[in-house]
Length: 232
Image (tube, rainbow, N blue to C red; front, side, top):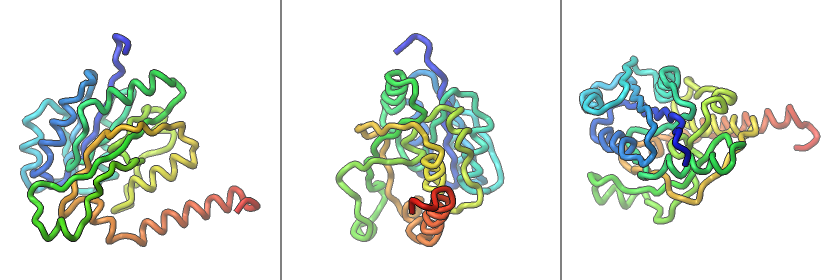
């Protein structure tokens, strides 16, 4: 690594996650990479999320509840970093996530984004019934999601902000757009974050919105047909 560390802006949107927000923040502050600006966007929480977040050296921003896409975009507007990274308020980064990803950019300056793998885990408070109902994979999985991503600021803005109209599948929508914009990316073989399984995480909710996911995929195919009518 060079002596000049580019600033990474880390954005954590939070909405009523007082049970988990401290662990998320601490996993960012524990990063082995030294140049971090941490922004927590409170999306209208009514619990103790704000009180807990303000205990830490962060930039805190409050807005009325407008969902995660709007909260992430608000964090981007407040940020100053050359790179952008995102963490959901119920998940945890591994300590060397950013250091390994910055090293990948140094090895290939043409890269625009670096992803990694996710390891899922049961949140400690879950009872046996939930654990029997929801399977937690033992193997890590490649995660093309915002929580695993480190991206150059200019590259992110080239693709566009998060869709504020979506309730779920926000990462899927953005990543489809990134593919269409030919994002230059790589996926490290390393686990870069731990994804918490609990009663109200986004993954559980998204299973209830399968139609929205299908709509996004259909929209992608429609665009492909419009741009390449003979190839489909």
